[in-house]
Structures are given as C-alpha cells and as structure tokens.
Image 1 (tube, rainbow, N blue to C red):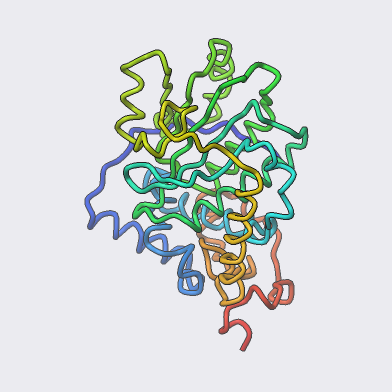
Image 2 (cartoon, rainbow, N blue to C red; image 1 turned 120 degrees about the vertical axis):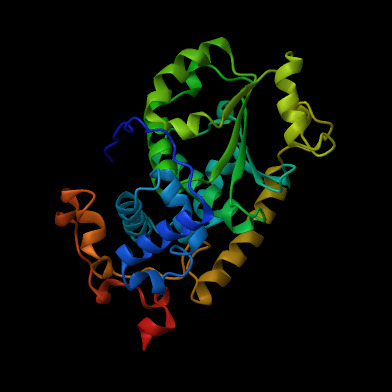
Length: 317
C-alpha cells in the first residue's frame, strides 16, 4: 500500500448548522442513488465526519466516501472475528476499557511495549477489529473515542515506522473524525525523536488531539482528572482501579460482541457503519473524477461479484 504524506491543512472553516446541512445535502447529491441505499455510511453524522476531514470540500469528501466503500468491500472489516486476531490480542497491546471517559466516549487502551508479533498485516487487522468493536459499542453522541497509550517499558525496539504509517493511513482515510483525544502517558525522551518523524504523516487536526501526560507533572495530570473517573481508571494511568487487562475475560467480552456484529450482518446491516456493500459500479464517477482524475481508472465490480448475504433486501429482489 502506498502512503502519501497529508497535504498541509488550510485554516479550518467554521460553518453554521444550516451551512453544514447544505454541504451534507451536496455530498448526497454527488453520491447519487447510492446515498439512499447506504443509510448508515451516508447518514448525516457519517457524511459530516468526512466533510470535516476534508475541510468541507464536498467533492473531496465524496471521493473519500467512495474510497472507504471500496476499501470495506475488499478488506471486509466487519467480517474479522475474535478467532482471527486472538493471538494478536494476547498481551493486551490494544484493548477496549470497561469504562468510558466523562463524556461517555469509548476508551481504547494501547501499550506499545506489549507488541507480540512482527506482522504489520496482523497488527493492522487487529487495530481494525478494535476500531469496529469500539464503534459498535459506542454510546457517545458524536461517535468519538479516546486512546490511552501507556509507554511503560517502551523503547526504540517497540517502534515500527512502517506500521505507524499504515496505521495512520487506515485511520485517517477510513475512520475519519473518530479520534476525540489521544493521551500519550509517560512517553520517554527518546520517543520525542520518533514523534518528530511520525508527525508529518498525521493530519494537523489529528496531532492537535494528542496530549502528552506525565505522572510526575501535576499540570499535565489535570488532563486525566478532567477526562476520567479516577475510581474506574487503571492505576497504570494514575487512577485507583487495580483491574487491568485479563486475556480470558477480554476474550469472553469480545466473543459476545462478535455475536452483536453477526446480528448486524444477519439482519442486513453488514457493519455498524453501513447496511450493505454495493458494487462500485453504482458509485457515481463524477464524485471522484471531479476531485481526482486518477479515479477514472478505478476497477469496476458487477452486481454478480457481491456476496448475496451482503446485499440489502432490495438488492436481492
């Protein structure tokens, strides 16, 4: 997968609710009939995320939506099950906390030093599984989540620029405006050099959501107090809860969540993000070609290539 460095972001626009709705309606028009057949991916909140990610440029937002749909068609993130990634999860390098922040946002805990595999493909697959699960279980109104990144035991052997770049690519292009806050907890000095290398590959809106917090710095600790209930927060993050990651318990939680995902698929909602996967031939070329002429050469799929269990009732008739 090629990775392109994000272009410099222009000053973020501020639109009124009426102007935002007008932009959403324009994206739906650019997407054409498919907008009605994808009520989740093309819902107002979803389109709003893509518009914000592209600074309200409707053509670019439409192109981004099309690329996400094609990615989901090929990658099938909603089909990843616990059994597929159980080995990646054994050390608790990424897990969904059993609490939310004070805004009700889902919390993903990450411990880079607990990396237990060398496969970038496997690591990204586990990340995607974790993102899908976090979105499925989210109760927040805005769909944002929080990342708590524990740097205990981290050293340069824990880093991989390739994996970091692939991670940024997937998250920024296919899960836009999902990150509400990322807390880097007790990062060592050597990480600062790594951060300098990684930062150019992040959108400016993304790295502005990243906060460095140190346990020996009372001022930065206020960030934890403002965002979390210390009774629920793990002791590793300065909280009072002694409950940490337990693989067996977590496996049970995830398998129960997998049943919920299966229910989405069986009822015609193939993921928490969209109800069906349609052929890319049904995507209006104008939405992409106006934004990027390279899209004219995109591979087309016929309806016959769509698995029957991923079609909506209308598609099956």
